[in-house]
Image (cartoon, rainbow, N blue to C red):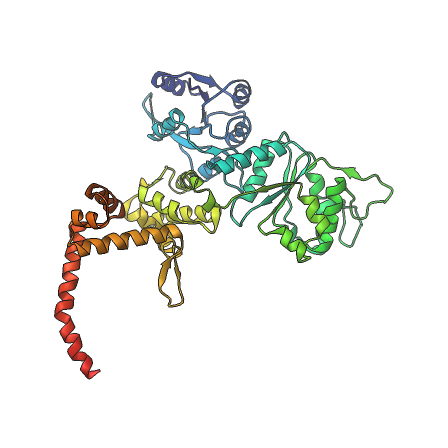
Length: 491
């Protein structure tokens, strides 16, 4: 049986839900009380009224996300809410919003209530397990991603070294944060160390800290990023271009998990750090080792647990759950309501190969909603996005499905597209030859008329229209050919 948790002080709100729902509604008036309930009971949906006072709503949502299943809805209720608040709450883990309206003593709820209630009765088919300010939720449906998530969970509770491999935009940063969120150290620091953006002369100080007076300008003692991550996780993205000297310094830390600050007395004992260390790259490091751009000993040290994140084109089952998430995220951000995607858009998204992976998908969804903003004053906010809001993407998609041969003529990029194009051309010419007669065309193709009609419907071919077009073209040719023959004498 579904169980709903209502967090807030509004008695009329509790009565409203209790009267209209056929499953239990548990109530608590405090944020701390709700955390206690989540730790001890199974809850299927959470409603947070912004009337709570003991914990800031954004902090409460973040704490709740760490104690519940990733696909458990967290719905925020309020008399009014700003776009800035919507954006913040979504990034912290909220999945929906309900506006409370009062007419006298009677409480009414925005229609979004029914939408979110539908999600409770029919849970979403994708996983959404963690989120933060700089990263989308780790959403997946494909079996390869389920396996990957299991491996991430398995290695998350060890002070080991993880190497994340995948194309640009595939979700390596999200995977790193997800590993941290899955671990027992989830409440400890998660420190991102963008080594490539740090000046080489300052790397050692930034990573390991320095003593006061260690060098010119070191006016006070400074703790490095690695020491700041003690007990938590260190994430170092895109390591393929690390200078040799940085590889040496990291190699020593990976091996001994100790730091020595710049200017520290050599006799001072080195400090041991308990950290989960995560690296990521979008290139083949073994190739860089052979080209002597990466030290071989460094590569073997970081290649302890290697997790490969597949590109989006190889896990197309994830496209719609991800697109749905981005659509909700940006439609609430821009319009304070949920805007869905039409079936024509969904089909277009599934056909595309997404060379830019998840990042490109997010950009396309955000761009389409910004385009909807331009039409807002004239047409009102749409409830469903059609292909007219994706014009730039659709044109790009059509172009990406074609390549060009030596004569600069278009041929399909994929075998599947080529097969589809051949089938259309074959049946169109067959119908032209039989003047649109399905039965005669079926006889030539050695198939039944019923089977041929099914294929024609699937391919979008109208037999009568094809026959008419064929007769029209042949008629034009019949009358124009003598004219062309006559004109050619003067050319």
